[in-house]
Image (cartoon, rainbow, N blue to C red; front, side, top):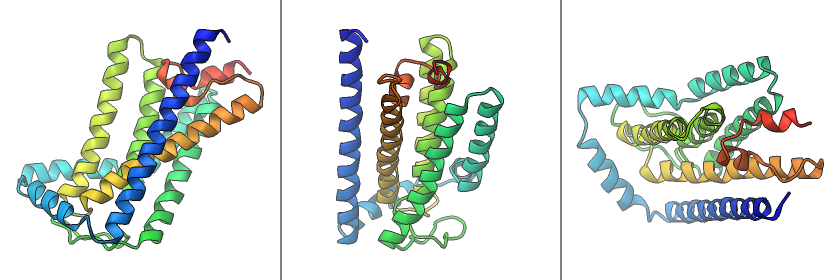
Length: 240
């Protein structure tokens, strides 16, 4: 690898690690504040402000967004994406999807049990029986739709198409988090913590993939770099 590419790779890695470290710090800070009860005022103010926006039509729309972030919907779409990847002989992509989402499931359960935060009383519908911190919808949707956007953007032609895919994913993930606050089934701090946990986990998966590639002598290419350069994950597999 020539020097410019090495510099670019090192810069991307440093940026990814910096983002992960920041997300981990924010998650830890939120968790501590939540356990001490210092997020109550923030959560109450935001919940009240969001609830004042409520209308029957908006409620139905938020229920749709919430569904797209549910475990059932994300799991079904993930399995579909894995099957499509295997059909097109993109085992690397399928493996990364499986690792990402299995980790999401384990992380969601572990964190909820670790913090034991009771749910707020829902504004609409029934209150879920699981714990509240962090939001599993925020965690799962960020990881799945973010990775799916990376895969689709890698195959899209033109900067405009790539940008559109990333913006659509960001909007969907953001609306899923907002819907959980709107419906009243999560505190705002739960949603923020879910996004932070997702950033850390996605970064860890990317770092693992990079380490495995480097250890097998395939060079420093990694999932985050492939996405940043607009490449398909199967590019790595084709070089093996």
